[in-house]
Image (cartoon, rainbow, N blue to C red; front, side, top):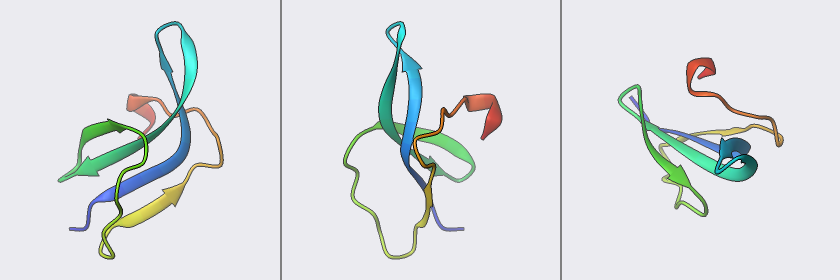
Length: 57
């Protein structure tokens, strides 16, 4: 199963909305941050600046 890379999203952190990228490996969120490298086998989802919630993934 390829990893999932959600880019151009926002998360709620430190009492404010922050731009972020999310990496999902084997069905679990493993990384949240910015500027991750994308493998050619990764599925890339552009969230279009939408808010992402863990229960919504």
